[in-house]
Length: 262
Image (cartoon, rainbow, N blue to C red; front, top):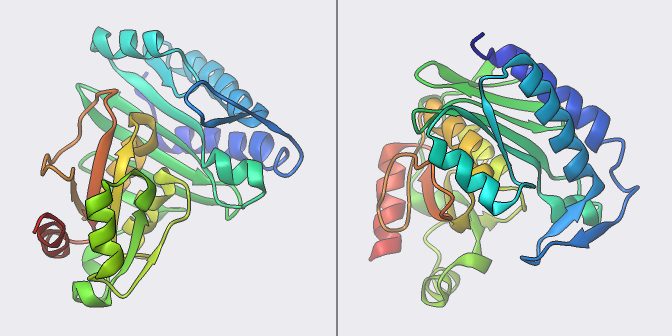
């Protein structure tokens, strides 16, 4: 049975409301080997969705953030369809009591995202997308072509300075080409807020596959553009972390990318 976007949205929404909201501000955390945080909520959502997705679509494998690197690599190497799940994107926010986090789930087939869901349980905002079909926020179509046009100098930027090369970070800090900047702490929501026009340009130095798979599809189906800092466009189903340069329109992306590279 082919996965259905609406049914997938319902599963992710329920997991967010029943596993994340109920634990928010109520549990502690521990550190993983890479220094990132892990909470009971991460594991609860991954366990729940892995079980539900395997029951409904047993032919599709599961690649989750809270899996061993060997298992993740094995799933990629198999070359079949798989779910790419980040059960709690923004764990640091969640653990600190900051209400900005999400669940991100994407269906990857033939090396490309086919379906994507990013759910913000605090705001009950469900961003969704299907390849070559479109992107939506709570059922309302997202289309960046309908957003007001503005030059780079009047844009709001979403930036993560922590993972940028020092030279580039300094260049931006000393002479930003945009009007204002933000950094919220959930990569998946970053892509979706860009698709919704809440900011216009984006930069991140290092994202994992489960961070951006669903959000990348939402932005591109909404009409946005992106690449890596090295200019590699398109999607790459690899476990190698990637940088991201993005904007709501292709023209704005070109201006932003050229400024960064020059």
